[in-house]
Length: 235
Image (cartoon, rainbow, N blue to C red; front, top):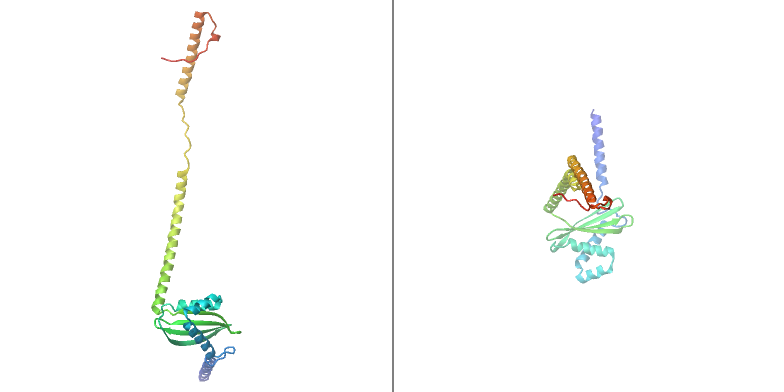
């Protein structure tokens, strides 16, 4: 039992020793031909140059049309807006992740620090991009997180309200469609008794016209064929 415990302790000590050995000092490591100090000097010299540019120099660089230079000056001006006076350089870190090497230089100002990140392709050590961002305080980060949360919750509630209105509209649409339909014309039906009375009146009128025509023909000694009945008026 004691031997097993001793072996386990030895294995743990070996693992701790290997972990400690694997952590190398970034200041002494070689970065594809560049040292830690080389990358640090490049970052700080670039930042010093940006801070020393006059408005006229910036206009000339922006007019050159070089994408990297234009992005660098524009991002620097946006990040340094309202940060106060320059105080000095702070921490510098180098991180390698696969084929990408990043060098971060923090610059201290009165109001807030600014973090400048240089992104390199490790195998060629070509500069791909430079990101410049003002470092937010903990209170600002919490405030932004709260605003994002409120906006997300508000968006969800708005979508739910819209869905509810759409579902409710499905109940109203059939009712509106029925109201828009034009009413069918109603045919007035004449009662059968009235139709019979009209027919009888017409028949009586014809018989009366025949009797009058025969009387006139007998009195005038003429034929009824020449008579034309224009109208019959009842009194």
